[in-house]
Image 1 (tube, chains in turn yellow, brown):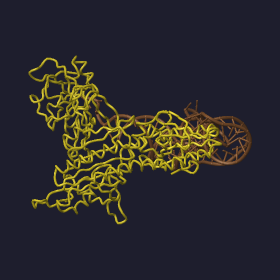
Image 2 (spheres, rainbow, N blue to C red):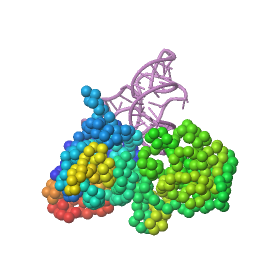
Image 3 (cartoon, chains in turn cyan, red):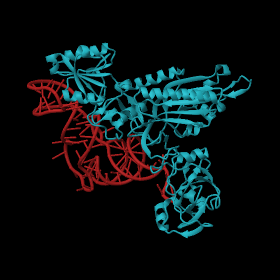
Image 4 (cartoon, protein in one colour):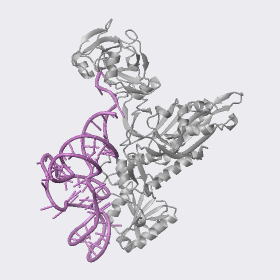
Length: 553
RNA sequence: CGGGGCGUGGCGCAGCCUGGUUAGCGCGCCAGUCUGGGGGACUGGAGGUCCCGAGUUCGAAUCUCGGCGCCCCGACCA
């Protein structure tokens, strides 16, 4: 197949739009792959759509290979389904009414809808099942941006498995995991399969597929030594050892004027920050205040707190803090606080300085278990100074794009929606589900993030918009034409640049667009009938006879 | 939700502080000539509700207020 640049809608740009920041954002816009319509809402131009479809096809083939069945569920969804699962309160949902006033949502994912259909699975004889579709999702993100990385409207492949029991779910989960590895490998992406935080999906176990990238919204933690890897939201790396001052038999009040930060406090008391504790009050949905306590040199990982509590939390505001503690930020602590206290595991042993709940005062020698009774949970955010929990090795932190996420949902959706079946033992049971998502647009963005140079994109072959980019220079149009036909006959998709442009512009566009090979026919070709074949990734160039094109190279 | 920045032809920007004739520049676009292996040169053109609204003023891209849009940071600083 040959596409002629002179006839394509292929608006390349010499300069990146000023609002672009991420490399993938700039290059995809400059290369004429995508255009923005509104914040987080994009059009795939013809070139971008070609890449998109190649990604989608790989996903489809790998889903089909594990026996998942493709279908298509609608975007417009009755609110009622979401009310039944209790997910209707999620803020990101776009809501709308029809002319009669009936409520609809535009779904973030299709668990509700697919489970609605799964009600037709009535017997264990009909299980297991695996269904998927590739469809539009809508999310009213608070902060869309970074090109294709965080969208408000996007296409997602989401698959759902239905099993009799946990053992069946495990099998489905592993099948999908394998399919994901093959999918990302075939797309040429470097990804890490790591434990993750299920977030609003609910469910128990989940795994993220993170593609390291210059721009991204996840942080991938890996060990330099062994193969430990995790999303920072669930990473359980080892904090550095604390340095405690002398032990006290009971907490002791001490005036700490103006010391409202850990650094100031540690300096004022001449102690190591690891011997201090930080009180971070949060509020839950019902408005009650929960105190999260971490070591002074640690940061709270909010996702962990919310996982520990089993519900979303928000940092308490000044008024809520004052009301609950009688003091304001900078002097807060566990002692005297009447609500629920969750302390990080690092605070289990030892004595710490804590706020006294009295402005300008702290307590020394505060000991969990003796002076207050917290619940313990892993709450701290991994730090670069941590060490690997498995081998003690040094850690590496990288920003990454979450290109896939798989969940063991259990009966989170089947129970409220009544997707039950009759088991062999004659008992009615809820179907055990899993859900598996991939964002093709994010794969595109991640590929560009991972494979580019100063001149443009260097697409992995499997998802390049065209296999070969033939540049026709003045006088050699006919040879270019023949080269394109030869390549096409060999089964390659060819972009033939037959525009009346200068050589430099054509080369620049070819580099920008990033097809794996570039074939140039120009003045030199008129002499010997050969063309220059250049590898986009390595820059290597060789002269070949037109007749030899498409053979191997 | 908070903080900051931006909004002027398709793209990138200047002008705004210190209101004043036909609102500039580069790229791109159209026509033509010369050119032709890494964004060439020259000539002549087309293209703008200066984000929207209200206000101040004899006069607003410019000042004031309100709104909208877009981008970035933070969503924790104990």
